[in-house]
Length: 352
Ligand SMILES: O=C(O)C(=O)C[C@]1(C(=O)O)C=C[C@@H](O)C=C1
Image 1: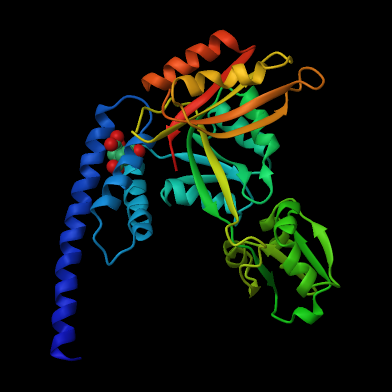
Image 2: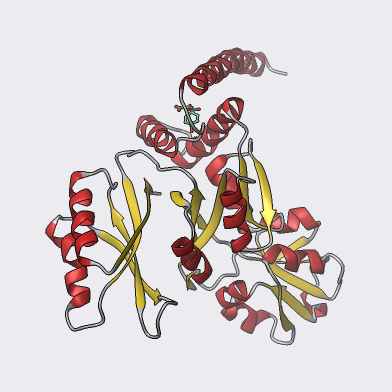
């Protein structure tokens, strides 16, 4: 070993000692905060502010995404010392939903795989889980109807959102594509990879699975089959990755919501989600949306779904910029309460 290398490693050891001391000091402070505050340890607005501040302060060479990744884990461990959290997601292990849980909460939580979106909502409502992570829309395939319908029925609040780039892989027990007779995947993933499949696996039958991870699980027992799933599923089920990024759209992204019992305080950069309905007569939708224009509230999403109460009646799902406690948002919501035939505010939370 050269003298210079030894010197550099000694410097890293000294920095690691200092980091160790500082991280333990940080953990003790979080424990003190935990003893002082009432209610849950998880404060999405504070975590969002910490990430914004650190990204602004970051002068490299670490990239912002490295900083977020690193501090997600630091905060996750500190939070777990205050209160161990249980998070429900759409399983089995190895799904993109599981990745979404780790991206938002870090590794120091107990994550429980659920067999359906209904089951996630049930687990949180019953208190078996503190939070649930549910998919709400995909950039290629559009809205996840079941999540939107359940938001109408549940007392749960939206506490956060996150976006996960979805990169699909083809995986099998071996890399010999010519011997693949069957491809398993979730219908959404087949829809996202149509062009690649039509070009590269024309002869293989496409078989729907309950989830991508379930597809990978089936392929682990079938040497003439392949699965379309995320990288994590190949790890979990010991499969080889034969092709990566096979999705038709390179920007393929799924948006997830965090649902829980909590009303989240303002972070300074928030979103509010709600559903509303009005009379079925000329000009009524225009009138319904007028309060947003009048109080300078930007809408980032407007989507209609059947109300399920009467035939051909619709509920409008809307995301707006700002927190319910912001003055302009509060005024617009008050006008809506007066005008709409139905209004439900799902919550305000830090914008991703
Ligand atoms: O500031 C708090 O309320 C804390 O509990 C500390 C802390 C952190 O580690 O920074 C941990 C969990 C919360 O979600 C937010 C921040």
